[in-house]
Image (tube, rainbow, N blue to C red; front, side, top):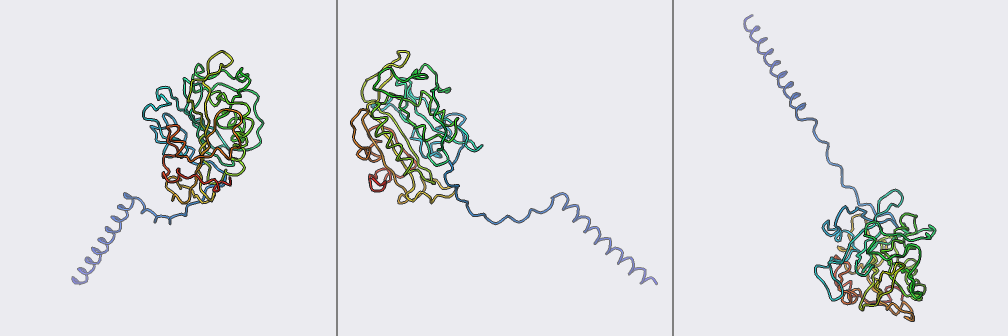
Length: 328
């Protein structure tokens, strides 16, 4: 009887011990929380939607301090010191943002010179989603982010001198997807006094060729600029003297195939053999012949202007000058 009693006590003790361990394990789980689920398998990178602008992070301050020049491939390197042509203290950098299909995108960035009343360069991405059939506006406007006193007074009319047009740096037809995006190309800061025969002739032909033949799903990167090699000026509507460019240029960069980039691919990290670049250089005057004769390497235009274009791209790409690559 005593042995049976002892065996019963031992069994009860064992059950109590097991129960205690079970409760303790429950408490431990409740303190730590449920174990994390196993990680999901890696998802394949999704290709960019054809014709969609990339990386639309809006700047909230100095684009160079934010290193957006390393994210947006079209942005030229910031000048660290004066060059033969440019005084850095006169420069204002400004990025216009907009919306396409409810998404915020960058429109263009300008390097504006307060003493010239115009921009040394305007840099922008070009894909199909930026273009459309929006009606051209009738009037220009002052750029709200640049003091009006530095801009040419061109809101209602062009320059009084008949030989000059309000020459767009970024063409309005590159941004006619909607009214607000296009309106920013009609800021006075985006204008320089351009020879009217050049503007309405071969320069317009070059702009049209860029849209019709070289724009691509991978994004075409464009920098359009003006160069002032002399002191020629012309008055605006209020009599302010505006510097007349001696030359204009365009530099272009894209992938060769035009449709190989995936989301997250940075063009500056691609193999140089996958990229192509070309430049165009022309005097601001009538009688400059076909735009097909204006070609130069991007590196040559860097040497002429003092600016470094497409700074994340290998130098060998910018040395290219193969007109056949561009069907010229």
